Image (cartoon, rainbow over all chains, first blue to last red; front, side, top):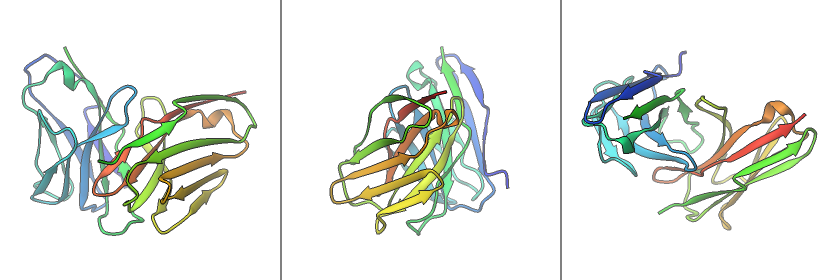
Length: 114
Length: 109
């Protein structure tokens, strides 16, 4: 098992550029999510999905789009990058249903928007 | 809206000391609470998960407790080692998952 794999690990964008952060998991988890982590703050939920074809907004969804065409993949798209989107992004996945299901995180993607 | 607070924000202790990290949350309607470890430049590694029906979980030198009624959890680390140096985050899972800002722990040799 590779677990949760995120690419790229580092990226520098210019304001207004678009890009996609990739996330894949091989654990057959129904639930996948994207978080951003900023200094001095906890992780904040951007978008999540409970299965293929189903996505929903989290706490800070503005400026980001997601789709879930397969169980394994959950890409995060920045359509027009802004300096406020400079952050570390984490993808996570878990099984749904049981309260005892652990959530697994990718290694993170460091994004700088200049 | 669930709010999760971790105190202290940073902690420095000598090797061998027993220590307690604190986590508080405002909404007791949770499924579980999880403690994570994060090393610099890395993702989060789950340490312990306590379901809402449980009071505590133990793994090696780590013990986590949960008091849902008071909205508190503690992570107890026994006989701390320099390798324990990391940021420790707690997260509560309700309708979504909310994280505290973390406690940065430094264990000095």
